[in-house]
Length: 199
Image (cartoon, rainbow, N blue to C red; front, top):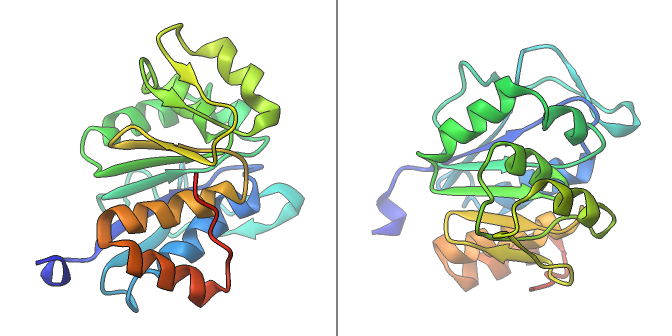
């Protein structure tokens, strides 16, 4: 059953000027919900193996490059000011588009939605992003895409999008609930002493 399956790989994509809590929040959530690594193996991945400077000059050494990372079951695409550059990076948008065919869950946080939009993954879906970037998202998605402004996260099945920053933690807890049940998600929130805000 669920306990006997191999741990799911959770790849968290990082890039220059990524918002720290957009990626560290989900990282912490999946670690807290991993049953001491039995259910989730969480790692960072970047375009190359150089140290990545997040907003505020937080320096992170990615665990893997996109060319050499273990196949993800869950891919988290965070936001931040750097998303405006990465959304135009064809290497990244192509990688995300291709890997989206095989992942179980693709989760964007905040303006990570802009990257998914330019990877042509949001057509016809219900989407959200940071409230301050709704206008940017609206300018690049098709009329078939429905933008929700007052939600913490929205589930389209495989593709889940969250609003800004801390909403990525709420969406990550929702993913744990979806995959492993409400008790596991609630326990993960308790471990972090985090007040889980649902939709």
